[in-house]
Image (cartoon, rainbow, N blue to C red; front, top):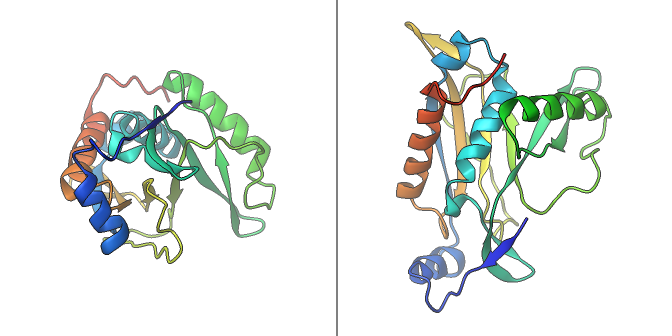
Length: 213
């Protein structure tokens, strides 16, 4: 993992960053209906498949890897997913992470191993030694929502995206899942978020991703 500093003196986005980071601190969220018809037709395991595709897409877009590290603005060369898993016994969740640096089959095996090891721990963050380059994903599979917003009263310097998935549903012959994306306006405008979502949607509908069951 490498953190690449941004030189604000030559950064074309400096004026926008200063405005939305200092003058008018601003997060925003957008909820979209992600078409997952291909994933449903191919009967892949939905949560790990979406974690994998989200990670691949995040790693193609610098605004979604931009952060402040030890007071320095910059971006990670790659990100890894931190995600929630639910325990029916305790009715709480654990936040765990899995490296996503190979193909989907490798990630799925690592994901299953981590879930088996930590999902029933009853602890908030049971897996030790989390890396710095994590982005957060959670899933609320009990509700289909059309809007979702996180309030981050002390998160002013947190620039990385936060994703929340909901309950999938069928509409006609297509299948969809709500995806809420929360971003910091200092590093991510509506254009960047829409480009990211278009890319993610293309990955969900494409046939080249080779997601095994």
